[in-house]
Length: 337
Ligand code: PEP
Ligand code: MN
Image (cartoon, rainbow, N blue to C red; front, side):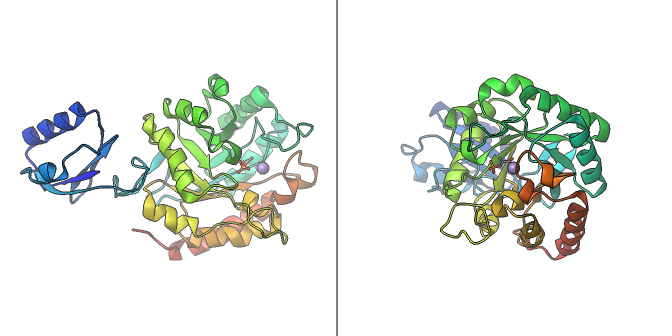
């Protein structure tokens, strides 16, 4: 349920109303915009008398919100959320490119890639330390040591670091990580989402391989319900019947649809969505044009020798070319509001 307040609502009456709502066991999500203030009521609102609220002097309008996600809902928060990652902003017109290898492999590798992607305009460094691999015999990542190497690359370049968590027990290792990634395979690991909701680092939440947009938003809701509002949504390709060339099918429509429904920033991962390096450029251009708030792209200094996802990884030169193409299209990008 959302309660839209009249302009210049009396503050004493507003405090009374907020207390009345909280006494009924509901949480309040308050959004103060330039034109109006909205109270989003979170919890079981079935016993709230909508007419009673609507009759209050300070209330302009009351509406029931039918979607099961509340905190993530644009109706609760009409303005775009801007996530601030140690000074690097994403959302609300701030476009951010995250780049780096699929996996951290060595100090030389991650530090060299960090320098080159920064020179091309990336504002955050990615790199997997804990890798969710289909085969238990495949490279599983450097784990804690990988995070230490990311920290070195961050110290050298100043780029905030983004890396995937697979279990809440790993959280102590993420103390110096700037954005915690939840991978596609963990999008519905609800205990992990709850644990991440109780801490304050921004979360990059990737859409599950076979998850709907509503399921993605419900997973964001899990994190936000715990108190962490810093969620970045990521479309990374979904499973469809199509197998020609691509690893997954990039759902570009998810960008405007997510932005209609939610105020959270939306980034596109053209690397995992396509699985093929040469398709990363056209999909990056398309994502930027369709109004994405950013991209996350896999870059490797020697893709042929990469321990993971070499086929979809760009060389630093190819990444530089993608960045120039994306920059060129950005002024014409679709804007949701
Ligand atoms: C990744 O970003 O390295 C990754 C494993 O992605 P996803 O969870 O989207 O497969
Ligand atoms: Mn990868």
